[in-house]
Image 1 (cartoon, protein in one colour):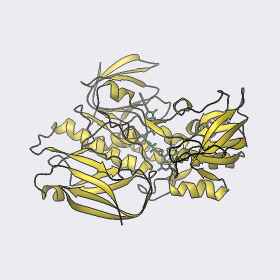
Image 2: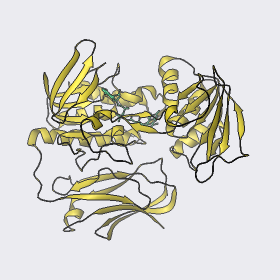
Image 3: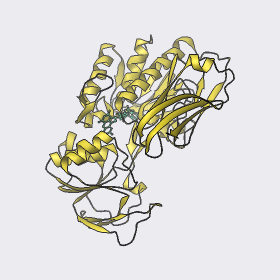
Image 4: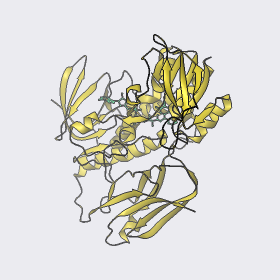
Length: 421
Ligand SMILES: Cc1cc2nc3c(=O)[nH]c(=O)nc-3n(C[C@H](O)[C@H](O)[C@H](O)COP(=O)(O)OP(=O)(O)OC[C@H]3O[C@@H](n4cnc5c(N)ncnc54)[C@H](O)[C@@H]3O)c2cc1C
């Protein structure tokens, strides 16, 4: 059996930043396990620019952004294994992994950082009626085919779902010579970033049809067309609104699901809203010494926030290894997301264990204009941040300080909500 102080599952931006941060916090014995043939995660297929504006104040492509962290990993001489799939983790932190050279092997760790990212919602999960012809792809699969494998999935394209991957692929397919006829979105608002709607649809005159869905896929061998219909407030198709589009390809961009099979297997408590682990202020799960960060914890809009969160996870895991879990005299205070806020990460804060500043991230469930993100402690409003617009596609944050929480005495709960102006 191999032994490491920290084992990180996943070599995407979260795993890389967590590894570098843990090393810089004083832990020498670190191993990153990655099932793919290279480090960098999903960023390797994101060849568009727009990454790193917050972290590096530059517009980088996905691979360029990932490379900055890979370089740091190499400089820090952190060990990693590629082509290595983690099959199981136990609550006493024994990891079972497999690769071609070593076969099935076990590693014992003092702490584990979960950084497995997320995967796309598939057609099976969407209940689209019709045959199963060739030509239906998830947008991320199409992105990999075009950007990494050098294949064009089709020439006449309809995209269902206006998440960021769908928007980015509308532009990519257009630039590669395909005709993107329409992007249809079930909800009355887009799930993607505003900047992607402007740069990927508006700039290329690609129509976005909100409150629309695909009700039929035609073609037996290959997609020959699809039918769109408008939906009502209950997301049911409205008879008489059907429109037919001739196309050979349907791309699906209908949401991302954190990859938490390993987490569930080891008994980690999950958040029903994020589908990620429930974590405390240290990004530690209910299983002591197991931390989570990045898209496996909750789906992020910008990779910069993934890196920032992963740096904290790496630092906290290092502290756990070097100092053990700090005994706290104060209790874990629950964070409650309500009135527009759908969830918070973290879900509890312990004032003794928190750092001077605690970032609390959340998403809203609807589009709100000229509003405030507010925080209440024991019924008293302590933060009131003006927001011109808040949308479900964009992550929100509030920052709580140790000074503030320490000054409030016995705190029953911290409430995060949206307030109209
Ligand atoms: C198509 C697309 C476009 C995007 N565009 C932008 C953009 O323009 N700007 C921006 O800032 N952000 C963008 N993002 C978001 C950003 O890329 C992600 O937030 C970020 O990559 C998440 O990092 P991660 O490390 O959590 O996950 P990933 O990058 O998904 O990495 C997870 C890694 O874990 C590995 N793994 C999973 N399970 C196992 C296992 N059992 N064993 C071993 N390894 C495992 C995977 O192979 C993968 O390499 C985009 C994302 C996508 C998908």
